[in-house]
Length: 132
Length: 132
DNA sequence: TGCATTTCAGACATCACGTCTTTATCCTAG
DNA sequence: CTAGGATAAAGACGTGATGTCTGAAATGCA
Image (cartoon, each protein chain N blue to C red):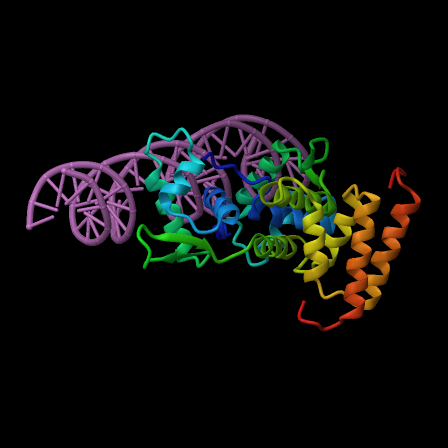
């Protein structure tokens, strides 16, 4: 059984999280955020992680700026969707509905959350094929 | 950044899926199912995967039977829940609600599915702390 | 009792992934 | 314009996860 590498590894995700929070950042800025007490050894690590993320089209590198600036090409929601689909593929033959049911049961939804979920469903009723 | 091993690997999951379908099985039966054209080389592989699953408490080995019989200790829904929580931990600080919202948006819910989801929510309104 | 099957313990190869090293390139202070 | 510091680029490396396989001991059956 072939081993399938992860789409985004944990270390890569840590970098991505900072990019989601802060937007356009340089390697130096990212390194300082990720390793506040860093001795400077970690710069190359962040650099390599960004290089891999760029190769996988998850971040964009602006080479016109100096030093280069990086920004995410994938949003948090996009990644959530992707991970959910991967889970569905492995456990439900690709169907998302079982995940949905599971979540509704498992989540301790507050009345407010239930209500907002209902309005979300109402929205979907109203715009069956709208772009959002 | 420490690498965290998976709870259940892909190969282990393949074994577990058969157990979910068929219930109590021997290594031989599982091997024949997983490798229909198997030359018998795979027996030990399945054996090792079951050994690891047992060590992680995901399957139970009945040593009174001969040959030993295995059955799952974790259900498909349990694993779905676990994987969803892991995803939430990595991407939403543990909160499941964002996953739920994401799914409702992403899934092409038919009107019927929306309706059954609504009644599920109604159930939750009615039994705030019931056992199910 | 002999044989086939199963059990058990462990070895092994490959690869993912986080980290580090080295060299080339670029900007800027003086 | 040059020297020095920072950055970019390419690659090497170690550890560990994971799938697979080997060999020997144990067990049941003909």
